[in-house]
Length: 321
Image 1 (cartoon, rainbow, N blue to C red):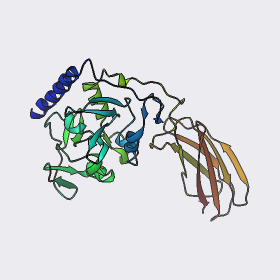
Image 2: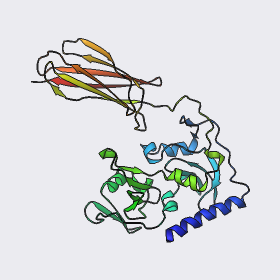
Image 3: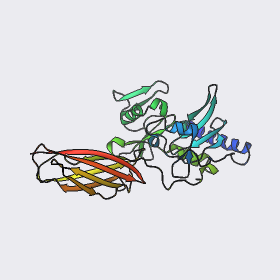
Image 4: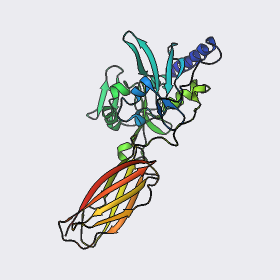
């Protein structure tokens, strides 16, 4: 209950502050400069530097959902800010100069203690955080450590709880949730707290309206991966090639054009044009490897084109008994 009262108080305070400052917040949408994400929202300057300070910004912060604008922080301070799907950036003044702070949206949106998940929270797979007395365990702890959690997530502020039918845990800046339907290495994801907070507190701002994009679609910077179903295959056997195309945010690229060239042991080359990648960023080719002697190697070169941007990959397989 204490958490619910705190949330209501903060929301009320934000409303009162907006009234005291005039009709709505004063804001000036960022002009079309900086990086264009193809969604009508631009990120520039210190906010863009903060966005790329992590190796996987789409996973940690998400895409921008507002322009940069002037608003009021949770502590009643006027500041420049920008919302992303999973976060909010605030530009704050310090004795050393201006710097970007990632807002503590986990704290602002934590509704108070909820039903506990029926799992142990002690043992070698858990870590207790003295600052809050809470433990982080299992895949959540692995995700925390793999993503510089101390900086990007902050301390845990809740136990492992059941919310909206999922196992979740709140941290100062984020909420982790367990999604068993996803692939094993991606079961843990961050909740879209940026969008939730924006919709709750600042949903009427002009900053939430896109101002158009200068490019037909977000630059993909494609990365191609190629692998064969079987690294060892017998003569005259069927072999399947998989080409996977992702962007710099590790998201699948649909509709990429894929060309491959196989080079056989005698130097003969065979070129193929595969189907464009599907919604999962995958294209595949099944073919007969031919009559070759065991221990010989077939190599592969892949050329991928997406929105005029190119990526290349190589692979090989060996003829075996």
